[in-house]
Image 1 (spheres, rainbow, N blue to C red):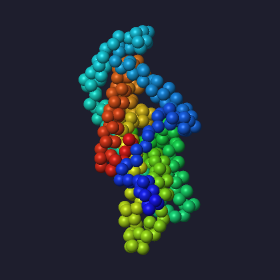
Image 2 (cartoon, rainbow, N blue to C red; image 1 turned 120 degrees about the horizontal axis):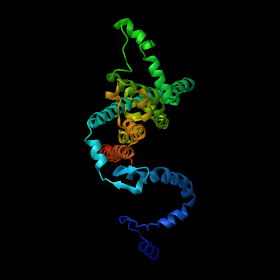
Image 3 (cartoon, helix red, strand yellow; image 1 turned 180 degrees about the horizontal axis):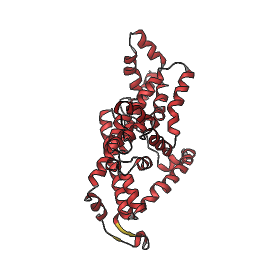
Image 4 (cartoon, helix red, strand yellow; image 1 turned 120 degrees about the vertical axis):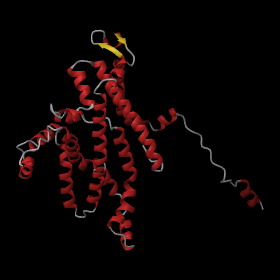
Length: 322
């Protein structure tokens, strides 16, 4: 009877939630101080080189004069933003930027996934490494070299036009006509970056348990069914994060390649916000106006990032950046 009474006295009601006392921030830092020391250099560099320069964004709201400085220049509010929004080439520049980014995202996003799925089916290690080497190599070619190669191969006397001249009897001006700029830019981007971007998916697919594929084979599943029900669910969280980051950078197109590919005749489709900011800010010296255009571009990126992350979390079982 005494043992039974003792058991009853110490009986725990597991239906009640166990309340754990939260530790303070100071206690957490003290307990994991070594991890915070490892984080400190990256945090310091981010504060200095990412958040520190944000002070210069004030120029966008001033009639900036290098002689007066940032604080001494006259405050003009949103005048520079209104000037950009009301400029005659605002619509063309914005649409060029959006079209180039959206088409690049829609055409380029699935390619690394397809490459990773195909590489995952290669069983011979030596052959797989050689294929990966060929796919990754274009990523290490300089942008200047890539654009130079495009001008050489697509020139009126280049090898591509020599093939087309057999059919059309005249060369095609690929680098001069505006309608070809987007396709050349996007396809060359896919060629240089798709192989490197597939690394993250290849690494995720390497963690798939081979027993799952063996069991699917025994159940009579073909290759496409195994990819659909085993491989794709494995990389779906990574696909969601990569898509969110890519969609959040829709307005952040690489300046160097677009600027190097521009010619006097393809500007109607080749002029985008980054090249416009460079020409207005550095070539013409209108720092306040160019800062306003750049800040407008950054705000659009932030809005897109938050919006896409919210939508993806709703559609993908709360799998997002935050």
